[in-house]
Image (tube, rainbow over the protein chains, first blue to last red):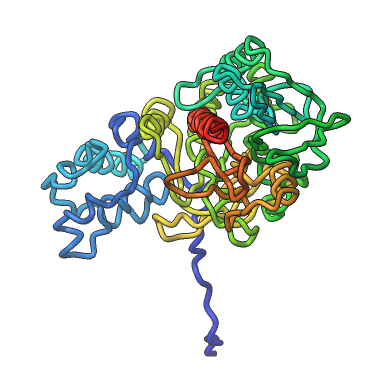
Length: 117
Length: 342
């Protein structure tokens, strides 16, 4: 019997801060202290070739999702970064952005393999 | 005969102006409605940007005022002011004084946070204002929530009663951003393991050292900043507060539980400022502060000859700006009184 009544369930778009896993953010804070200094100015995104040419989230958004513990979003996009380092050149707060991405990849790998962060 | 200046309001601006005017050779009477000098500064523990004790500044103005031997009337409110022989007659408490010039330094009040009902101040015990937090600092740096437990997560809501047309205040109160950053750092100093979140629309770090404070709060103390105006706060059954905000940089709504929510209340003209303005029929700014004669060239005079204004009755100000403004007003008064002698 066809049970499609034309209704579906939408995924909640709300970031549930208390439920989210923020281990990755803590991990990066530990190994790249300058990561805390991001003020979301977007200079990194403006200069990012990958973000301009593909659907890559760009590093500013990655940072925000990271801090909120939305790791699935990050994992989807992170491999598109080419490590060109232009974002680091333009950052007014001196955030070591390449290191952030590198440690992010490392952390995601550990989380996927259920290793201690 | 010495010219007489009557000052209304013994906060930072009024007290500083009083001792400066005495030094210039005038007779000064200062009327203060409370029992002490210093006004709102008495509620503050430490001051940005250096985190010096407010008591140091209070000691400075109190000592200068006592040394100047200016006449100070405590517990005194003004009931009437009338013009008399080119000067003014002031009914202050039970006294009647004549004055050649009046300086109004009646200051500001903090925004009544109960008006922003959606944040629950006065309804939920764990929603407090920046003034309440400052009181906790003054009372020995003990920060507790309503269960007498140390909060693990604290939220600061910027722009409460500022930049908000819904409560009739469209202007920026200037000092709350940097005050939130200062208080966030002080909280981390007292509770190093607590998480601190600031919810802001814009961060207005206009002073020379303020940007450094902002950086220090992130780098040294790990204070977190989330861009978005908190839309509402609700109380959980255990007394914690659930807040809703859009994380505008992520482009997604966000909800978060905090143990203590601090509302950064803005500046509104004080009841005394409004009253004196009405009494003398002074021009007001669109924000209902007292309006200077010229926004650039003469910020101390008013539309009334011989009536001057100083401090936060004109606009929100830092302590440093209030001192500068009070001293500027005394020069304008001197110019007026000595000019009128000729």
